[in-house]
Image: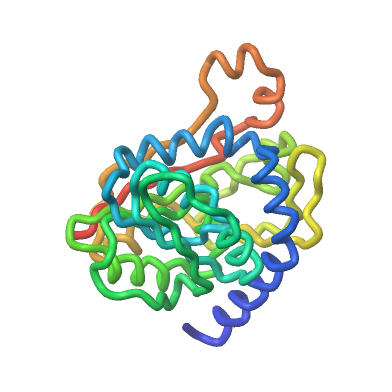
Length: 254
């Protein structure tokens, strides 16, 4: 990793450490409706049956997805760069037939053996990586041939500053085809994060090309969105989903 990428990665880690207690509260009190009512379901649908599956939960945060997969019989390793999030994840026992353990590690340099996993899941990780190609190469290394990589991230075609608060500005081509960084604090269910976070967005062709170069084949592209019933019956979705906010990619290791 070059010096600039290392600097961005250090700043990102420090900001997540500052926001750790905030996110533990948000997740464990089910305050993030984008996750609880939309993206978690999309990720689990993409994963499918998990019993007996060896899973890397990359950017695991406080570990809720790892625990859910372990209850379904998966053997999960969760990694995160923020030690206090790893500590929070490790403090909660797993109730189910599978197992989950947690490590502090950078996704750019995983302390894990080659071909050790059937599945890598990146749930809301990629928008917080200043340069994702390093991580994608590592995921390719630790996946067995035929293993899958699932990426749930912000939609680079439509996500703009304040999208969660109803902003729906278009992204001009002059910005879309480069790397965009959006600096803002999280605001979830009326709770504002202590620290600002930068969300990084790149054009779709960047993700496709980087996956290809790392030995992946793009198997599916999905765009999680509210159902017609959610939009009809719940005013929150009409206000909080003004444009396509999320992108889900499924790639297979050659």
